[in-house]
Image (cartoon, rainbow over all chains, first blue to last red):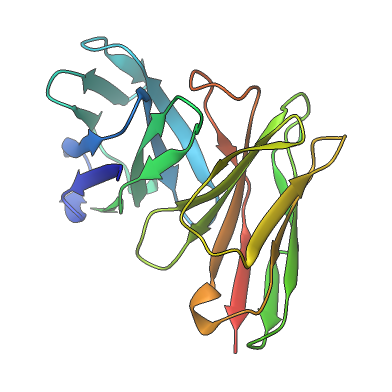
Length: 112
Length: 114
């Protein structure tokens, strides 16, 4: 059965801190690793990673995938209160079932 | 452009009833997936539809069914509702079936079973 594990489950930091969120996965016919940010409702797409070792960046957020060790990290630098959210990691399988398997998420709280 | 839209936003039902949830994908997206998210957990995959055919199914009982229409919108049906079906039901769309396009989510339907 496919499995995605995120750590830590929750994290409290002060504005300006840098955080690293972790995601390990075991996904059959692995195709890609996706990161989402969920505030109140819809998970908002952040990154999709398919190749090992290539960092993707968007402003203060960046992510990288290690397909050999089966994990990914999401970094957020100079955190702001608006970064407070649940960050979800998902592995996407291929073959006949292109489902996303999600982890439980990391609840990030950024205090002023 | 409009994102993924879901209706209704909230729904209250009693045990044993049935429910239909609706989803309109982003314009141009042909694949729709459904997920169930209970409090404190990540979304769990229920179904994927592409070009009106079921292309994937998660570990949910036969009480859960879905379909996709010619305009690519989709319905999720749940029969004989149980208390444990209370959750946020999310719909996601993507351009194709394959694993190289991100899925974009709607705001979900919050279903409460009394």
